[in-house]
Image (cartoon, rainbow, N blue to C red; front, side):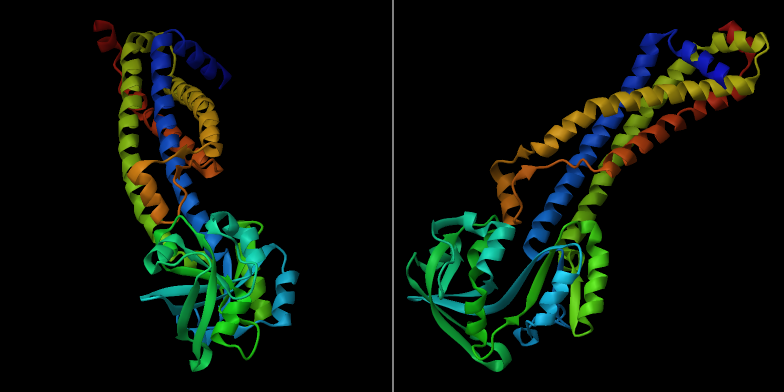
Amino acid sequence: MKSIFKIAWRSLWRNRRRTLLTAASVVLSLTLALFMRSMQFGSYEQMIQAGVNQVGDLQVHDSGYWENQSLDRAFFESKNMDETFKDVPGIKNVLPGLETFSLASYGKQTKGILVSGIDPSLQNRQTNLAEKIIKGKYLTKPDEVLIGDQMAKFLKIDIGDSLVLLGQGYRGLTAYGIYKVAGIFHLPSLQMNTSLLYMSLTDAQNFVYPYQAGLLTDVSVFLKSQSDIDNVKKALEEKLGKKYEVIPWQTMLSDILQTIKVDNVSGQIMLLILYVIAAFGIFSTILMMTMEKRKQYAVMISVGMQRSKLIAVSVVETFIVAFLGILAGLIIATPILFYLHYNPIPMTGDMAKMYLEFNIEPILPFSIKAHVFLSQTFIVLGLSLLSALYPIIYLSRFNVLNAFRH
């Protein structure tokens, strides 16, 4: 094997231009594939992370709430539940919440909105909500609310004005209240700016059911690592029992995952076209290299070299060129992708507006996860080695006399 490798190595560098051209085609193929998939998977990771930041890695509800999201399926917070969250390892943060729909009225304007009751300090620690305030201040006192800038514009309401809320409370009660607008926020999502209202969790509980404290519709659970999600989900289900359901982010963000699957198919089609072009580029250089070495093959067979060893030399040559091309491609692409991962490209214009409508930061991120590099490396290596079939077939049918005639 050592002699075969030595012959292949020397044979490659007899024509440096040919060898470098073959390696360059591998470098180009791998680099383009890495950039395409890194950008695509980076966008997917960004979409998922934006969704998880809003809903949590897991959510705990009363059993059946996810299928029928009615306020009547809310539950009361218990001491046992709080202790459960503290006992389960891997949990980073827990955000209790209460959501209900209501009519918001100011003057002659009325609008249907989603009321979200939050713990102001915990919510701000997790989502930096206070930094989204563009006018007024964050929640600091009872009977205060935060509204989106588009809602404020529609209702023609400003800081310090009183907003009337009217809706259905828990167990058929009528929910009503008058609240002072403490701040106006702007979030990336147009829908959230138009129809979302934040108030303290205590105020929300009093709004829908003033007779007993601790009413919740959900508890969002944020994990230290998403790799722990299955273990944490199983532990919570065992400790909380059948009275509660534990929903993973994959279920809550199923629409986003479906969008990603559809987009990934289109990306794979584009990548397939790139692979076909790359395969033809690599094959053409291997073909040229094989045809140029006809007389060299004829001489080697004439002096007694076995065809099987000659085929092995040809395969080793292809592997060496592919390996050198892949190594050079990784050296070129890796630092650039790492730089773009930590310094993503900002989006502008209509594309930025589209990103904002989906509550996604308008940047073009790049993924640096290992599977991006490994998958493309093995695919390009496979395409390169597949091209070695031609010299194998050619040498198995090689005619020494015909080679000397040409």
